Structures are given as C-alpha cells and as structure tokens.
Length: 221
Image (cartoon, rainbow, N blue to C red; front, side):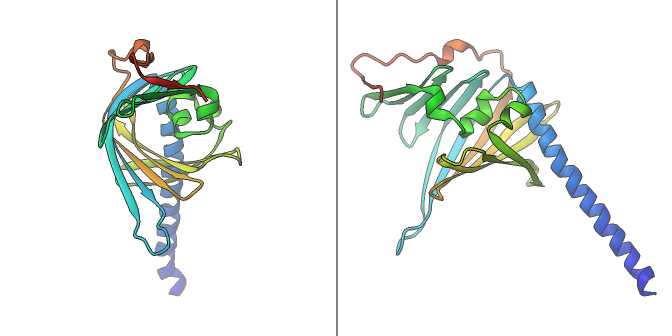
C-alpha cells in the first residue's frame, strides 16, 4: 500500500523535474533566438541601483530612467533623462560618456572600455557561441512570465560578477525584458525595459555617431 500510494507522488516529482529542465532549456533557446533575430532594437528603461549597506547605514538606492537603442554589431546608446541628463554612446570603435551638466565628454576605446560587460551581451554578440566565448551561460527557472539566463564572465579580472538576462516572448519575437547586474563590489543594478521594439526601421547607424558640442571638454584617458 505504501508503494502504491507513493507512486503518484513520485511521478509528480519526475514530471515537475522534467518541466523545470524543459523551461531552463527554453531560456537558452530564447536567448539564442534573441541574439540571432534582433539586429536592432529600441526601448525605454528604468534603472535601479542598490549599493551594499555600509556599517551603521541603510541600503542606498538610486533610480534613473531614459531611452535605449542598439544596432549590431557593437553599436548602442543610452540616453538618461532622469534624474539628470547623461548620454552613453558606442559607435563600434569608440565609447563616449557625455555629461552636459558639467560640459564634459570622455572617449575610450570601445574594446577596452566594455569587454565582458552587459553591453557585450546586448549589442556585440551575434549568436550564442560568440557570447559563450566570454560568458558561462546557465539556464534558470522562469519567473513572473520572464525566462532567465545567468551569465558569468569567464575573465577573472573584471568588475562584473554576474548578469541575469530576462527575456519575454512577444508574438514571434523575443524581447529583452530585464537585466540584473551584480558587480565585484556587490552593487546591484536592475534595468527594466518597456516598449521593447525589435528591428524597428527607424534605427540607423547615424544615431550612434557622437560629436561633442562646441565648448565641451573632451577627455581621452
């Protein structure tokens, strides 16, 4: 009797386990589809940065918002509007950080400035095999209608600890829903994407060309 009553429970465990494995496999498949399918995209974003608490202090959180666009290979742009304007632009060769409030623009080699960063996950990798050259990818269980993949940099000397990539199906397309980034200092940054458009016709290479406005101090470290 005990064996007979335990059998349904055992089958339930096996079925649930198979379902979890299938869901995890699907998240890697979805990431592969996103990398292959999304040659460009644009979205609005909200970014929440949580710093680890210092001794005797509460957790510190900062929220910002703006718009985002990318064009493969290697071009992306973040335009922050809140709480203050700031622009991050990569044109495939140079990475620019422009702060209009202080009248300063910093230009760095894109390859050196980005490396194994979340930007590489979005704009640089054309397929899963290319991405796996720099990151170890692990499927994670779906949650809140989002499929998850954990990406860990293979390079040990990096400021990035891990990235969780959240993907959501939009009809025949796969959209980037969320990035959860943890750096080497324990700081956590969550990027939530809304109104994500895959391959919009309005995205062109000209959007990623940056020319510092007249009078802006340009720094090239």
